[in-house]
Structures are given as C-alpha cells and as structure tokens.
Image 1 (cartoon, rainbow, N blue to C red):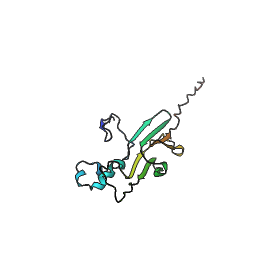
Image 2 (tube, one colour; image 1 turned 60 degrees about the vertical axis):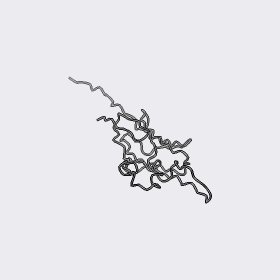
Image 3 (spheres, helix red, strand yellow; image 1 turned 90 degrees about the horizontal axis):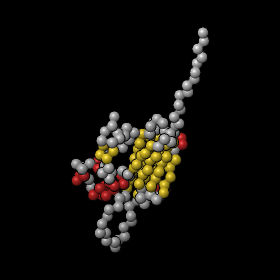
Image 4 (cartoon, rainbow, N blue to C red; image 1 turned 45 degrees about the vertical axis):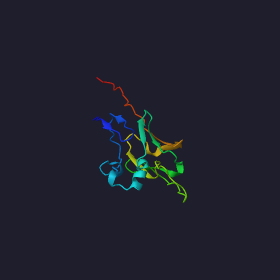
Length: 157
C-alpha cells in the first residue's frame, strides 16, 4: 500500500508508506496546541525530533540523523526487543551570564528521541554507528537473501 505522506521536516514529500516508524506523536508539533505550549518548550521543539533519513541498500538499512553541535558522548543508540532501534540524546542549554543581553534565541536545547521498528531482515547483533560532522550514521546489515536451491530429482521407471 503506497500513500503520499507529507513530511513534517523540510516540506519534503515521499510516496513511500513507512510501516516501520514508531515515532511518537508529540504535541509540540501540533499547530492546534502550539499556542498553549510554554515558550521554553517551543524553544526546544526543534531538537525533540531530530531530522532522520532512512535508506535501504541491497546490503543494509542506513539511518542518518542530523545532530549539529552534539558530540558522540551526548547521543545514545540502543536496540530494544522486537527489533526496535532507539536514537536519543540531549543538548544542554547554553550558560547565561548575568550581564549578557540576548537579541535572538533560535538554537534549540533539550532532549530528543526517535524510535524505529526495523524490518525482519535486519541483523540486530551487527548494528554499527558512527558520528562525523554532526551527522550520526547507523548501519543495520540485512540478512542475505538466500535463493532457493533447485535440485533436480531423477524420475525412475
């Protein structure tokens, strides 16, 4: 079943229905509730759901997350039962000096978490993650497609 789903991120659209996503609905992104959310919560909304790309190659599922300004020590990649991959972390709020005068605050701080149910072909014990230039890359190898062996059976008689 393929549907056209608008993306919340960057206005991109995809024609692929993603049955594996476990993203939890977050009221910070609901425009109906946005006015009722305290400004401190709105300031952190941008990092609550880090931007993620998930592609599938013949060998692996590759998930990339934009996490600018974060070090690998601030990010956690975990695998839960039921083939669930969880990416989480936290960006600390910048220390404010008593005499500082802020003109604009747009960078976000706070916690984020994304969860994905991986498909049956994922090799869960061989997942690897790396981080470079603020981009986390998680590589989930796929089980090899075993082609059915065809055996010729002699016909007697």
